[in-house]
Length: 264
Length: 250
Image (cartoon, rainbow over all chains, first blue to last red; front, side, top):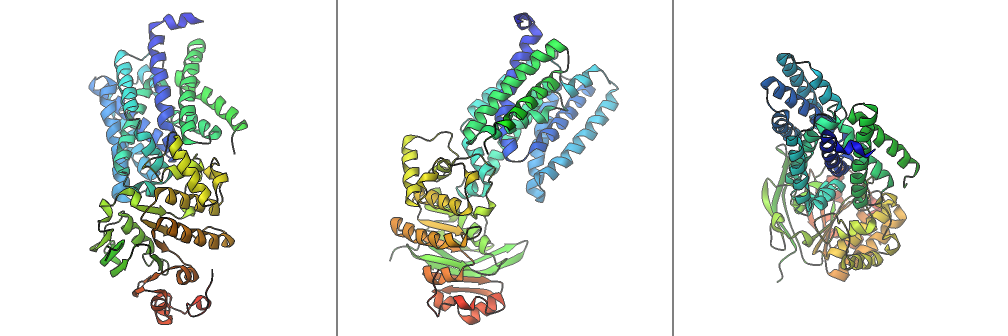
């Protein structure tokens, strides 16, 4: 079974997959506890729109998709601040606009190729060195941001309590949004636009079911992210199915097992 | 003459250009207990937010120990929010919540010194046995105690409570006031408590602020909670059985 690790494309996919498992598992705990499950969808379609624009312009997708998605992530928070609309309404607006722009860009590009299918549902064949480097840089940045875990956790538990303690909650929210946006973009190739939101939800939700503390929820969510990404890639290779779908099915199986053993 | 712990002068707070209250002036000395009473929508929570520095006044000033709210060190104020507004789905342990009183973040792990302090504070409020309990399993009364322990561990100069009796079984409320008095004596803290409980205001508080769209009255309970003031604030002489003239008890 180990011959698959000799394939260069599989090595890249595994390296990227494991890093993405760590990142989505880590940021997923905040997405789940802040009830922002819809955020993954909103950002994924922004990433898709960015990719479509890159295809239209003939550019490397990640360099267009990255700034585009970050802008949308910042726009969602900005809109909430300016209008007092709820998070899901702000996300809903950007979600629809992103998708509409994506469709316009694709129509203009006239390239309804296999590329689009890969981006929608994920493929293990498409990870290149640029993707690996960007993902590694994001992972490094996330490790450096580690001291913010406690601040994010505190304002996740109670925003007003954190504000009363002079925590600059708004600034930290912007940082968290940018990091989640970049996570979504780097995960697009392997997981696919359609399925990426569940990466930010299912491992963290599974971890929530079996955790008594936020620390253990974070550790278990990261482990589940890594394990299910690895398992999904293997299955994807063996049965020749889109990788994102295989990973999410692996996550779903573990979620239902966790439900049987959950702490009340 | 020591500096008052809370000094508010001509404070006006507006919401969308509509004044919530106008020209509020009060002063609270170290160790004093202020009860804030008033009908819903009178701006009691706005006042709490302004003291916490979360809301900027339209005019006037707030000084806490001589400092503007934004410049007050975080551990000067022990804020006890309404327990009903807390996220009970958050996976946290009781002692972790208490440790947030010592630092401005949720603890990844708790070291020995923090655990010792948290345990002592929890035992002080009679909740030592709840140390490793998940906060989602606590009743409203238990959670209120945990917040008092969080306050105690911080050793604040000013304890700020927003309707602490809301969401708590009535039989536990008097225990809570008793505990609050003890904590006040333990650490010589001053207290500002927003409440609907006029009996508690009368019995426990040194000063009372009656706040309503019709005006504000500040002074000791007898002076603030007169029949005329209550009629003006609430539109009737409600809660007459709790008037300060009798032997009001909680």
